Amino acid sequence: MKIDQSIEFFNQLTEETQNSSERRRYRQFARMLNELKEKDTSGKHTMIIDRKLDEIQPQLLSAADRKKAMQSFKKFLMKSLRYVPANYYVTLGTGLGNLMGSALGVTFGITFYRIMGIVFGILIGGGFGLTLGLLFGRYLDKKARTEKRVLEHLWI
Image 1: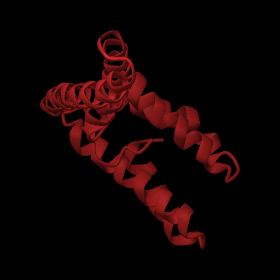
Image 2: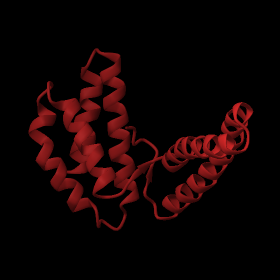
Image 3: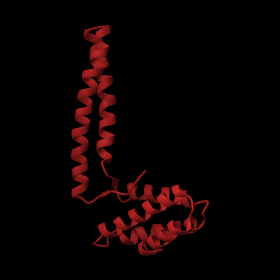
Image 4: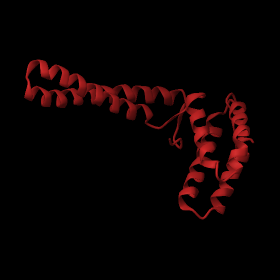
């Protein structure tokens, strides 16, 4: 199944289904495929994507397995072709930075002041970790944008 055929297939499914959540899911998947088609102007990933679409085509035709097939295709895009959703690294960096900063803040806070050190350690360490995670995440997101690996409609 080619990318164009898949886009037509999901547009047709969008029109046929009565369930609003399924309609939204199919519409987003068609947008993601359209964005993939526009991004891959050189055609280097087109054959790989077409092969994967051929592989999951029987699951896409079955209504019961369609959601699972769509999820496996998105995981394939992220793992094999290294595409990421918009603001992926910022989200990841702020979460990990907040976690690590709070943990280090508590560790160092306890050594200096018993009770108040924990509170101030969490506040200062969490804020510091959040800031570093945000900056590092923005850097990685910018790098991914320049490499054209960001898909706006790739939802996890």
